[in-house]
Image (tube, rainbow, N blue to C red; front, side, top):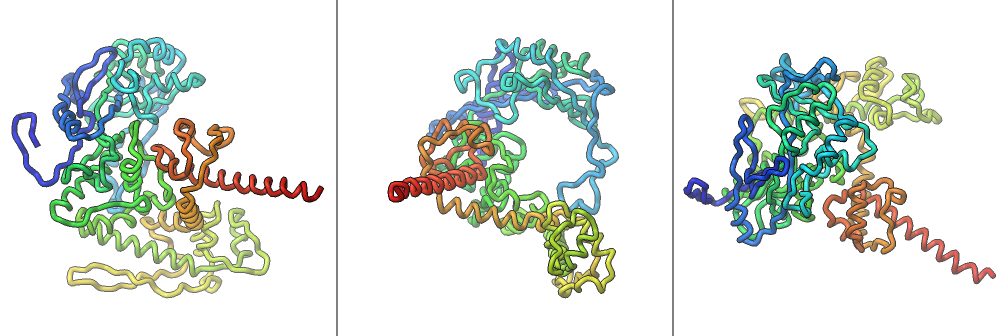
Length: 547
C-alpha cells in the first residue's frame, strides 16, 4: 500500500474502508470542491483519495457514483427549547448487551433529551423556491444518487407535495458541547439560504448555524466483485467494507468492517473464513444482497429484506452469533461465553417449566378475557400453548400459575442441567425452580418471542422452501405492477418490477431492493391466478360437451 506521504506498507491482507473519500467531491450550493468530508470541529476539509480510485479502475473494478448529505449543525443555546416537545431518554435504559443487564448503564444520571419540531408551509416555500441554488452532481444526470430512505428536505418536499409538515428531531451531539444535530434537514443550500430555512421553523426563529450542511459525492465499487467474505474476486488478500461497497449508514458499515476484518485476520492465519448465512443474522442478509445482486443506490438494511426476520431478533443475537464468533476467534471474553451459557440455561428452564404446566381450558378462561378459548371436552392447555395466543403475555401466564396451589398444576418434568465454568474445571449444578417461579429478566424477551412466534416461524420457513423450489415459475408477461393489484408490495419494488419486468421468479430475485416477503407474495399471487385460469379453461371446455 503506497501512502500519500510517500511511504509503503506491506501486508498479506488489506482492508479498504474508504467511506466518502474515494474521489470525493463536496457540494455547498453551486460550489463544489475536492474533499472527503469536513473536519468535525473546524471549517477545514480532509482531502479525497483520488489515486486509490484510479488504481481500482486500472484493475478493472466497476466503479459507480453515490452521494450522501449532512444537515447544518446548530448552536443549542440559540434554540427556544421551551416551545418544543421534549423527548426524554428511556428510563430505566435498556442496555445493548446482556453483560450489562444486571449492572446497569453508565452515565444514567447524565442522560440528555432530544426535542422535536416540524417544518411548515413557509419552510417548504423556501426549500422549493431555492432549488435552483442546489448543486449539479456527477451522477444521475446532475441529480446525484442519494439514499432513498434518508432523503434531503428538498426531496421530501418534492416527493410529498401534499404534506403540510415534516418531522425534525433536534439531537444534542454530546454531554460537553452545545452543538445540536437537526435530523431530517439535510440540504446543501448556500449558507444564507440554510439559515432562512432553519429560522422558518418553530423554536428555531433565532437559531445560529455553527456549520452549514453539505453533500458529498464519492466513488464506490460494484459489490458483485466481492466474495461473501468481502474479499475481492480478482485480487487475493484485498477486502472492502463500508460505503465503498455501496451501502449507507453506520451500522451497515460497522457490520461489514467486522466481517472483512475478521476474514482478513483468519486468512492471514490460514484459517476457515467467517461467513454468516441469511438465516443467521442481518449481516448475512446484507452481504448476500450486495455480492449477489449489487446495488445502484445507497443500500440500507431493513428487516423486510430478510426472509427469516422472525428468527433474527435483538433478544437472541447472542444465542445466534456468540458461538460463531468464538469459532472464528473474534469472541475471546470468558465472561461473555459464561454469560451466554447462563442465559441459554435460563431460557431452556423457563420453556420446560411452561411446557409442563397445564390447566383445563375452563380454568384459564377464568383469569381474564385475553384467555378466551374453546372449553368443550375439558381439554387441558399448557402454558406454552396459551402463550401463543395473541393477547396473552408471559407476565399474565406466570401470574396465573403463581396464584394457583401446586396441586392444581402438573409438576415439572424434572430439573434442567446447567453447565457452569469454575476455576477448577467444569462442574454441574441443578437449576430447578418451583412452579410459579418467574422467568429471569434476561431470559424474558426470548422466552416470550419463542412462544409467540413459534408457529409463524415454522410457516415462514415452509413458505421460503416452497418459493425456492418454484423459482423457475414464469411470471405472466401482462402482469400489472400497481398498488391496486399488489397492495402489499412497496412503491420502490413496484417501480423496479415495472422497469425490469422479469420473466421468472429467479430473475425477479436478482433485482436489488426486492424483498423476500414481496417475492413470496407475488409467487402466491401468480400460483393462485394460474389455478384460477386452469379452472376457468376446464369449465369452458366442458360447456360444449354439455350443450
